[in-house]
Length: 157
Image (cartoon, helix red, strand yellow):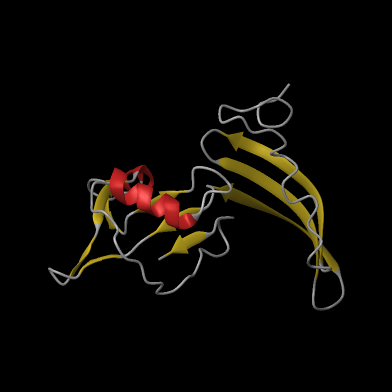
């Protein structure tokens, strides 16, 4: 029995090795295998797939994915003070890679707690948790997710 595959991991998830096996949206890609590498807080997988190249040949390739879950962020603007509000948080990956103290200045936000949690609910919760403000009015600016490395959607407000 392997946690995250046939028994629940510490977050109650199973079947994590099946993610991506049913993809059919691109006829130039055939999924061969998905291996679960880790399922602590985030999920790490290696996927082997065949890719149809421009010259008509098939190439077997392998990629790792880092599944952090979906997130939401908000650019807070204090109209009274005519300034944006940012937060400063410790991020271990930058610290271990040479940043002097690992503290980054960021827009407030975080992961959606549940798959069906609405991004606006999540980001309002995160703003309160980070003790920045209470959101009274929202206006959409733009939406753009991270590309290529992570299978995550960042909802930006």
